[in-house]
Image (cartoon, rainbow, N blue to C red):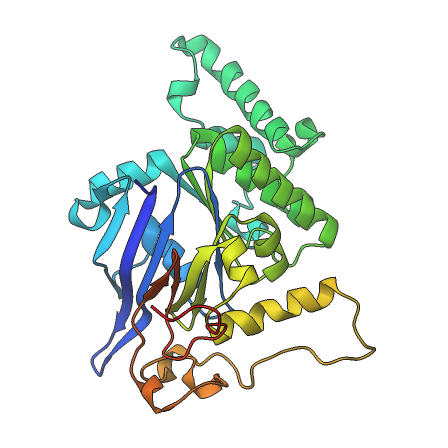
Length: 333
């Protein structure tokens, strides 16, 4: 049984003139204990998917799905109170730009102590204050902050982005969630700090059996740290499968072009050799193409691409394309 099973998720923005499907029938399956990478260019809708899972979208958005199951429980068919209780207990999320996600008016110690569950504290009223402080220290130690005493007494603006992200992770794991959604956790950080954060997430995944949905446009991070990969373009599912299958034999033109550059960086090449890239840019949500949204930029596009491609499965590898690539060795199913 998957930990999180999403089928045909549609997130719509409605106004008096029309309905815009910012996420159009997107599917994702997250296995228990895995790191699942969700890849896409900026503006592809990755954060929107995360907020739909967490129930953080306001009333302007409409969320529909054939399945939005958490451990075989249908999140869309339960009351808001029941859904929030499950999310509060089992799912945590860390956001990009961590310094902006923390309260600038409160020291770190107050913000961490606020999220520590009562079940982690002794029943005695007199011992709770000290136990809460010790637990906050322990959380910072777990995420690799050596100068935890100085960090606890500091305000967010006094810490680096890397330390703020570690504090956010410490707050996220305070309740021992089964799933951690990491939305661009290393965005705009220097390379050494990025590696520290990613190693920390991997350690949490291995030591606590915590599943991670890693949302990023950093292809190297996804390729290095994920077990499974789903690719999103302009709100539509493109391709999903194990990391090994996607890197070895991508089936969608978009996936092939994305990961060609990773291979090129890992191998010696000619001086000033060009990078692979699609012409054009990701379309804005107000002007989404009909059918396959990659169509206007796709090198293999044909007339049939004005129709939205259905999901096709080949040995557990799912892709959405009328004219897939790398199909010479085995027939299309």
